[in-house]
Length: 252
Image (cartoon, rainbow, N blue to C red):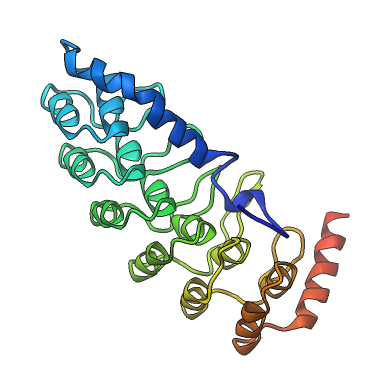
């Protein structure tokens, strides 16, 4: 979905949405099995959360299944939040599911809900204590993910709930881009997302790990409208040259 300059740290990983869609198709058979399985277990809970089977989620939770799933990495709350299953999200949280639990590959429930623009699920997670600025070893913050996938309403919600538009989070051996750079790299980048980020404190002269500024990224994407917007809010072309030279010197 990205053209021009892209950065692997602004996305959830190759084919994340495709894999989730395939999982939904494959899971159809799981749904039928979950209806006849005599004893609810962690697998039933995860499958029900994935497929939006609220009755299956309720049955498993009432049987005492751990709302956070088991040790194999399946996180029912993440699956329900990804699909926008608000009822299951509410049930899981009521039974004590951790709203900030991180999957083995670095995803969180709020991150996935923001990526898919599932606002009601996001509100439930934030109300339950999910951190709008949480990042992991694999991906940036929920705000950066929402910006990268063009989820305007999710961006506005996160900003209203305390997300840091200027965040550049260093993780061990991983560089995460700020939300503004992620937003500009999206093929559907729009002023409706860029402007709130700027007003929220995003640095219009920040550089990415290749020494490029938001202004350079907008130019490389052929977005003259966003170039003008950035210039109106203090972006400077000369900063790009200085920053790029500094980044090259540091890498050499």
